[in-house]
Amino acid sequence: MAKKNGQERPMIPPALDVAAFREAWEEFRQNRKENKHPTTPTSERRILLKLKDRPVKVAIAMLERSIENDWRGVFDLPEPKTRGFVQTENFTVERRPSTYHCPLCKRVHHVDEECQLPSDDRVRAMLFDLEGRMKLQ
Image (cartoon, rainbow, N blue to C red):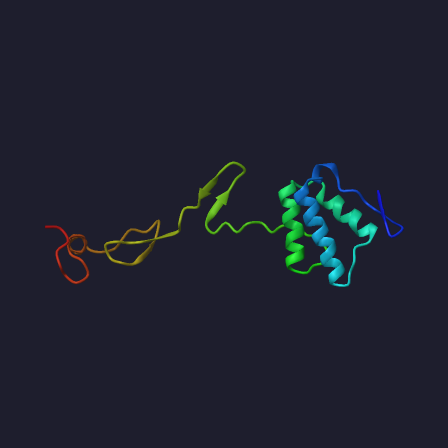
């Protein structure tokens, strides 16, 4: 424990005791001071307990997020939005789309549904573009 102004300040856990984390930690403490909510030894101890099991980069990101939002506490990072992808531990798999854009009739169909154009219209759509010009020569 380090003493500051007669109060016992908790030490940074060894797993987080790197220059980048120390800098982010001091910046967090300074931000709290500037917002007129200085940290107490108890609050520092609780925050460091929360951060000690996180990887250093995650702990720094959590502190930076709190600084950016002028929060008094430190919170877990949000889960990333997948936007149509399923994430597993080792890789990302694209989710199968439920619809597709049909190049023949220019409509959107469900994947289980087949294009309902009559066969002669299908051939015409394959050979001619929208203005009626022949695609293949």
